[in-house]
Amino acid sequence: MNTPIYDRLEIYLVAAALLLAIGIYGLIRRRTLIGMLISGELIFSAASLNFMAFSRFTAPDPAVGRIFVLFIMGLAAAEVAIGLSIIIAVYRNYRSVKTRELSDLNG
Amino acid sequence: MNAFPASNLIVSVAFVFALATMVLGALIAVGSRLLIRSVCGLAICSVGLAGLYYFLHSPFLALMELLIYVGAVCVTVVFAIMLAEPTEPKNEEKRGPTLFWGGTALAAAVAIFWSLWWLGKSTGWKTPASRLTDGSVKAIGVSLLTTYSMAFELISVALLVAILGALAIARTGRTKP
Image (cartoon, rainbow over all chains, first blue to last red; front, top):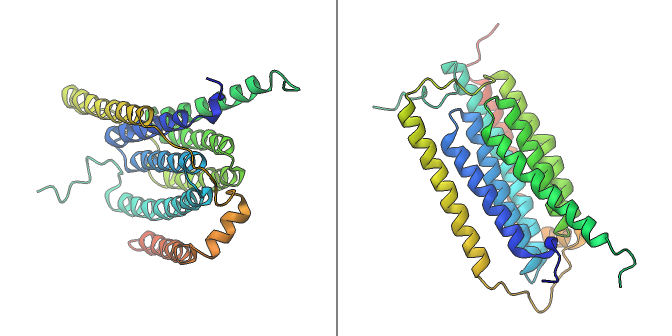
């Protein structure tokens, strides 16, 4: 195997899969809204890393994957802004961001 | 023969360092009980990810990752933590369901990781015969303003709407002093 470790697609794919797995574990395991939001950001990062790896190694036009990653970053920033303002509104009403206590619709 | 025989080794060590930084930051982000530490884990993870972007021949995206994630997203989350509550709650539930859901989460994560690993290893990825562009900042800019100009404008409108919506949501329900 002559290609160095940083020039192999599989390494990046495995790293992205690991990041996705950690993010999903945190999304299920966390008990506060902010913790779930942080885990969601990890999942976004995994998707971005996959796009970057494929645009570097297999895409005929490498600019496409990079533009898509830029769009993912912009939408993640918008999502964080909206999500955090909702979390703060929820905290003002309930005095808590624990997911277990936000159960008014739980009939 | 390369002029610097150890240069490949040094670059490999830097790559492994970036990879380890990313994984360690992600583990801190999901594992820590103090929320401020998990935000710091997210920042560390983003720094490692920026290093990986650099190894993928894209220093521009590495810079953007640092600017947007470490500079904007993490700072915003830190403000939200200061306004809301700082710690993950103590575990007041029963032991059985906690262990059950923790096991379920771990099993789901391991299953996804293993299947994606298998998929990435077993598929024969082909490198293209020729590249249309070189993926430089100039190519990205030209594509953004020609092929993807509509999506670019939509993203800017989405960001504007998100900022206005965040202000509107966070304002309502605030009592006057």
